[in-house]
Image (tube, rainbow, N blue to C red; front, side, top):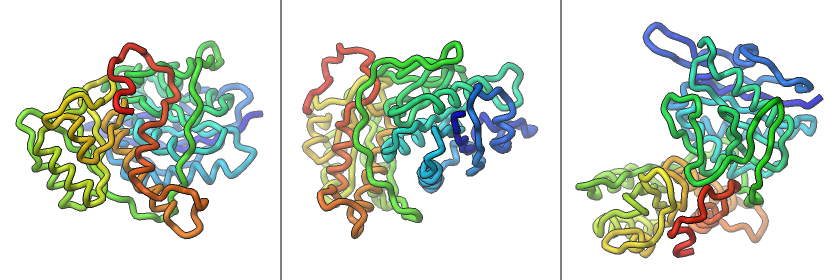
Length: 354
């Protein structure tokens, strides 16, 4: 018998009609009862919180991280499933993945249709997630949705309402769930996990600022004035902005603020190709390029680096050779090879500036 713990956090998979819209309200046991459990799998449910995932905070994600860590302290547990709203699922999954050092899997899933929908996708997704959690090993944190298994890193919500909601625009699935079994594709080794943040830690503010036509430094300045210790600049194209924004980034990084550059383009890596406020100048100003991470996960990378630096800097929290420098940690996170094999080897910008 394989033992899997389901941690329920709300989302559409736990939602019912409220008269004027849907909201998360069902407990985890109700979600589990909506479908079948794979043969040979014993399930225990933990109700952590019940929220629409658009309302999630870093405090929620830290509670989830520590709950998963506590659950896996039991050697009898073979895997964990997290039921989660799809709006921010990619962020929570990547957050947990960066701190996950256990060989046993953590599997995120959710639904695009509410719990009481006829022919909904909740039961099938949960069944596939339970099967993956019961049989997977050395896969880290993954997302299981619509019969596909994706690495947390790089996977995003690609459609607002379609059942095949998730995908990696630059990578291939790690596996597929078909005919009651999981078939695995080739994958790369996982990077070393970051040190676990202390319980009760105060999360730093990390904001996302998007560049656009007529873009200036007003939003970036406001973010810094609000106390942001990290900022993700969402550039145009391969990670471009303006000379004025590059100057503002230089001032921010000189003050110790972490700045990562992502892109508003749906696929492809950011790369130092252009001057005139482009990624060449942003890198020279002290920003880090986020590779193929889209803005939401780039923000998680910055947040995790700040939290890990605080943990590594605490007395006795880490080995003597641990790097307590947040910028160095962020660089390591951003430069780590994704688990998923590249969807295409034809990107001319891949590896530029590495």
